[in-house]
Length: 138
Figure 1 (spheres, helix red, strand yellow):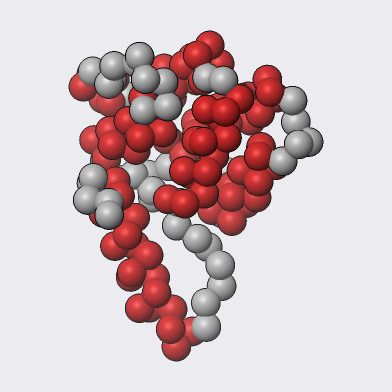
Figure 2 (tube, helix red, strand yellow; figure 1 turned 180 degrees about the horizontal axis):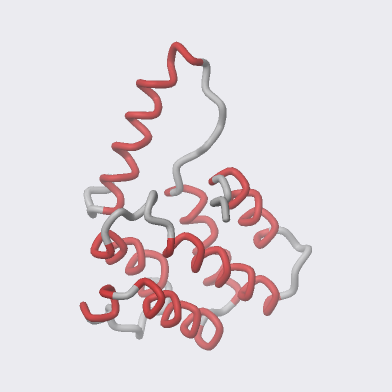
């Protein structure tokens, strides 16, 4: 099965933040999108790269939640299951919207760029993404 483009994922994020879904539907949609993102090796080549991403998206919105233990990051499916459980049971609608906003800001864009500028912009975008997942965000 082909992976969806980041543009389509960003379009789905817009649906979540619109008023088209109720609170529970928004949570379910976010669970699916995050599951897809967690499983993508092109965004996170190593499982360890997911630690900072998950801490910013999942742990920080819930102030009382402690960071995940290292063994959780050994399996992407286990991590996705844990994230799904937290979103469905502990997230409020405002947490969902905050997570969607963060995702929109950190996911690399997939917009078409003129060919003479594409290499420099794509490299800069990739550098920004790698800095984010390694915790060197500005």
